[in-house]
Length: 191
Image 1 (cartoon, one colour):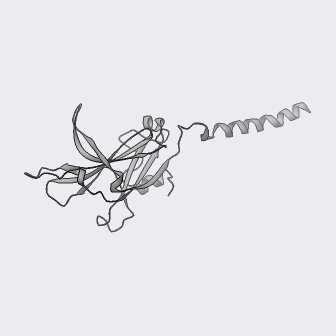
Image 2 (cartoon, helix red, strand yellow):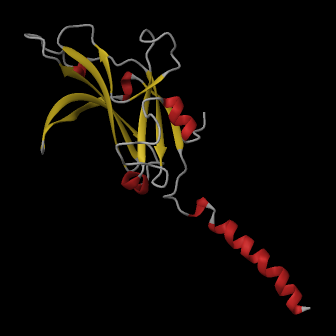
Image 3 (cartoon, one colour):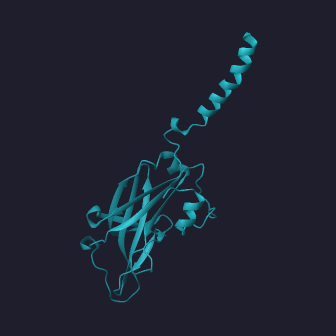
């Protein structure tokens, strides 16, 4: 009788052990593919600097407006071996549909000679930063206005977090990163 009970309990114990070891809740560094949709308005940005790399080991600081968000899903593991992508909803007037998203960095025409409007991002563990700045063009004699007095429109963004086990750090990603719908389908992102 004891042998029969042991024979019945052993497989059940193994199943319980396997189901527990496959549970992702125990390790806060293991996140699943995630997307966070949010809006930023003019008041969300403060004065800051965007560092533009100008050569090997050198950079130029460009005045910028910076919005910082807490993003708890950007864990140390994601920072070390995962991927964070940020998409902006394409502003009305640039497309016939305002349901399209474009990958940052994104450039808008200023409709004035001499500069373009740029949006870029950086991230670190627990933080995401969106930068709004002016990029000087080669138009002679023109100067970009001060970004500190700019009124930044309210735009929608999507932050996509792909953990290390699914992330990529290669020149050939598994999907076209510029196409949000393709990224959403490939990584099974929620709506």
